[in-house]
Image 1: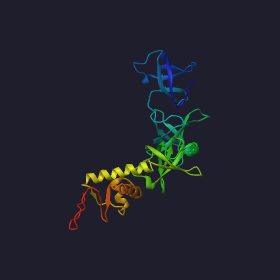
Image 2: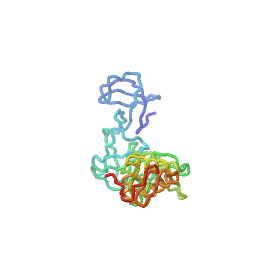
Image 3: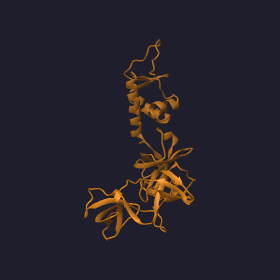
Image 4: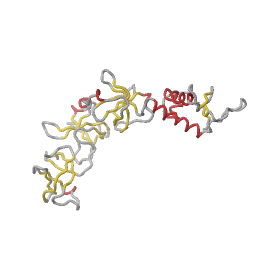
Length: 291
């Protein structure tokens, strides 16, 4: 059976002036135009192609690399807009249509947005939509706190950044857990931080709990080693300075520093922190901080 909007492995059946005809296991044919035919392709061999409908409504095959398949989401750019909707660049010669009714906000040429692609039941054509929540039908009850997940960044909010979890659920990364610049469409490996009673999901870009603190503690030790065992940072330091230098929140920094203190690896002074095996500066001396 031919599957529109997906990769298909089909057999090369015969040649024609327009290209190669490919068939599925029950004999359905589709044309692979000459511009996609290579010298290596021979009758009787299998070839992997993507299927869609051309401007005249005919099934056609292509070897072009598409950015998404049916049921998937990808960041696409608007090529053009006319009276029926926006047309998106998605790796195929024929642009993907997003009708106005499928746009959460009106799109303009050059805009980039996350798009879900589906096969329209009436027209049997591939269509895009930016109204993604309709397709976020995953079951949050199966998620386990601490488990990893593939996260696609969606958009920033006043609380943090929304992300799509494994392609079918939406969660939120709170601002305190963001330590790098994020953009829509970025794919990150993240973690389930909390599943609330109402089904809402909190996310983290880093593992959390004891293992996280241990990892962050090592980062502080590495910094101390590189700076002669002394640093100007303490648990009272400015949050922005901590975030800029260590790429962690002040809350995480304090936990990591506290762990090092409990393990007697560091000495906490009023104005600085030093490794336990480094002598304290004399009262007449001031630590020289690195630029």
